Image (cartoon, rainbow, N blue to C red; front, side):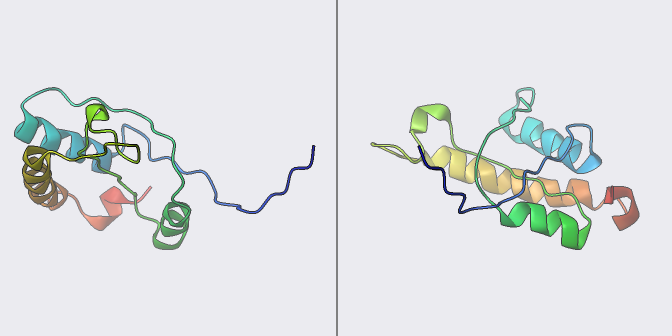
Length: 107
């Protein structure tokens, strides 16, 4: 067997207890009216670690698709209700973030 390394994207994680993550959770709860489920998901977005290193600010990735919508799979679809709610979550999230100073959001 031969293994050829061709991508060196660094791993990244923003802790669940970070104020930016908690603010996102509040926004989800307001719009969806259910408790936020903080989950860890695998993926490959190498630029995220670079943003963290260069900007020294938290990176928050927010998803709005449901597992039943088969993202990146056959019969992939996205319910417009989740699109609309996602816009409301992001709008509210900006208001939540406005409560913090930049120094409070830095690690």
